[in-house]
Length: 342
Ligand SMILES: Cc1cc2nc3c(=O)[nH]c(=O)nc-3n(C[C@H](O)[C@H](O)[C@H](O)COP(=O)(O)OP(=O)(O)OC[C@H]3O[C@@H](n4cnc5c(N)ncnc54)[C@H](O)[C@@H]3O)c2cc1C
Image (cartoon, rainbow, N blue to C red; front, side, top):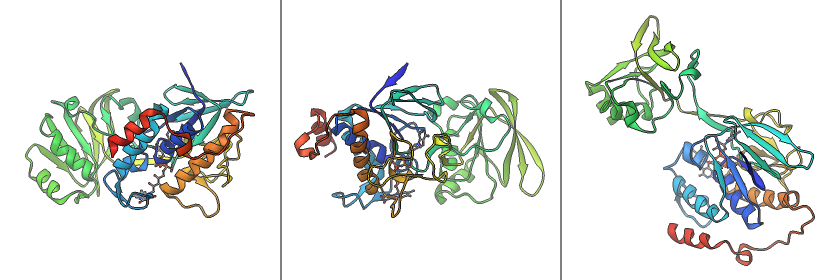
């Protein structure tokens, strides 16, 4: 079923979330598409617990708390979220509306598009193993949602950071076996956790090894081929591979949309944030113009500029009189949400 809305926002990072408020103030409904499974963009994926000091009126705010507050600020405008979806195709119809299709087959029809895509769609860093996609979701995972899912399994964890070490310790409590495969002898994780992992008799280590291949009948994994750095191979029987190599982002899903740019950012008119393509706006880290600062604050201002510019596209011929939020107000739930977060 096609989701009908006024504005389709690509990216539910801080700037995409504030754009819901900015558009909502002007009477426009929004749907947001994000490759991640939760809102917040870089704040959620890269630094949820870090303090941020340069948000006006907030001397200090943790990144995850800022995301919670942006969600509360957007809530009165009832945005529709399509998480775990990456954009795939964009078609413009004769009436000027856009039909956006995601890789998962979802469709959004909107009068205008706001690209708040940051550095691009976030996704896991996949190890370069043949046929790995055929095992994903059944035997190969890039994060652990529920520990119980892996009870009694023979688990191989690949990676050398905090996630790999912490999940090895946690999954050892439920798994039949846990083996950690890392290409270096040293781990880049909290030292006390590394000490506990090395001392845990339920956890085996393969260092310095790297993944070389998968064996099994997809989607069921039977074993991993490992290669030792410096020479030698090994076969490791495993039901599950959890590869924890962090996140990567890229703008490839927006390529071919006629937006110009260098593959890392999209040029916009700094007054309207409109791209080379009429009706498509870019805001936040992805938007480029002379003097651009990649800051949350800058993205918030761009969201307001783009919302005003998009109004003419969504409501052709309808005059837009500038008003402050104190004049316009917000739907009732906004006050309630604001009270909840203090
Ligand atoms: C460690 C660190 C500390 C920082 N500290 C500060 C600070 O103190 N103050 C400050 O102002 N800034 C700071 N920044 C920068 C700040 O995080 C960015 O400016 C901000 O996140 C940009 O927001 P955004 O919404 O434009 O993009 P992002 O936060 O990058 O969000 C973009 C979202 O779009 C999604 N997306 C992209 N393309 C697609 C697609 N095709 N399909 C589906 N989804 C897509 C991505 O998955 C992502 O969730 C920091 C950055 C880092 C890495």
